[in-house]
Amino acid sequence: MLTEAPQAPARRERKTATRVLVEHHEVLRGLMRQLRETPRSQPGRRRALADELFDELWMHERIEESVFYPAMRDITPAIAAAWSEHRQLSDQLAALVRADPRTERFDRELGVMHDALESHAHLDEERQMFPEIERFADEELLVDLGDRLQARLEWLRSSRRIRAVLRLQRALLRRTAR
Amino acid sequence: MGLGSDMAQRALDRLLNAIEGDDRLDRAGHRLEQGLAFTENLLGITGGRTRGFLHGVWLGHPLHPVFTDLPIGSWTTALVLDLAGQKRAARAAVGVGLAGALAAAVTGLHDWQHTHDHARRVGMVHGTLNTLALGLYGWSWVQRGRGHHLRGRLAALLGYPVIMVSGFLGGTLVYRHRIGVDQTGRQLEPRHFVRVMAEHDLTDKSPRRARAGDVDVVLVRADGRIHALENTCPHLRGPLSEGWLRDGALTCPWHGSRFELSSGESLNGPAAAPVPCFQTRVRDGWIEVRRAPAAATAPPGSALVHQQEVQP
Ligand code: FES
Ligand SMILES: [Fe+2]
Ligand SMILES: [Fe+2]
Image: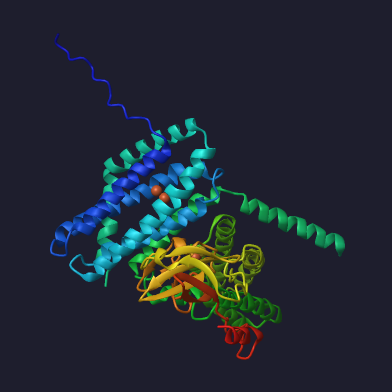
């Protein structure tokens, strides 16, 4: 045989939207944990981790806002507040990257980042919104949305343009920090 | 008269329902908010003093309506001066209105970004109309300066009804959607100490929700003291017990208003009003709370204060 057997494209496992999102919350929590375990004496690593958190959380907000929240607006009344909570997270992310990782201020911003993230991802979404959605939305819709969320996240992660925009945002935020 | 006002009412109702039901406004609204958020973070407004200043925290209510009177008043004056043929005075009135409109735009956007759903959509249209009027009056001001008074008057005539409709929408935001209005319930209960939670259940620095009679309260242990505030945020009724502490103040999870634990005073907005407070004590291992007299409703010697002094 001269030609290799054509490889089937790597298939994603199909998951419900809420599962996709909870798993991504875990990714974010993992980053938070690593950040909190990195001491002030390693500012380079702290900065790299903060960058990663900035990008990953930004993408998390965008996939929820573009795919998930619009589809859930008639199922739960909690969507408007969730949008606002994303705004709080964005503000806190900005405060975090603007803080110098060698300082005590960075630790303080990190502590607030942790609390704000848990407030939204855990107290609001995982404990209230998602259970309500799982009860009232039908399974098929959720699996469908799950596919779209995963595809969207992959696209964002691999897009050069998005990466460049995020890098620019971080640079501007840092440059203007006092 | 009756028929006329009926028709007006129906037309305005239809206008409002059309705006509030139009979800096409949401996408643009969120884009705009993200742009605003980035700008405010770059300028250091979010965590700084300007934030509360623009929300009117120092004033005790939103700053925005203070400025909105300026364009409406000045441009009405310009209309009258135009009729009287007072060219220079009319131009000055248009100019004063422009300055006020710009200040109203900045404070209005700053408040608008922290609204939800219907109010958000109405706010979008309100802002768009105001921008249109600002453009027309700006052009009018320039034309008058160049001696083209007829053009200047025409632009003002076009802008005036726009600002009227927009003013109507602004009123809707306050009276119908209660934006900028203190949303606390003004209850007086509980007047006597009631048990709300076992003391050992309240750990340091993590806010907990509890029930005091008919009222939801949030309990916070910080600096060796136990603080109790009403759980409902005065801005848009966000749940404070799901918030977090920053520099010793409780932050609302929805729009980030920070409240002083001991007094309930807002430190940064968007909430301009304080959260009502409770007095706390620990008896037999239980945290007990009762309503702290609000300064405005309970002057010294009032029944409430008397009751609390007699039965501590
Ligand atoms: S509800 Fe808006 S700040 Fe609390
Ligand atoms: Fe979210
Ligand atoms: Fe989420």
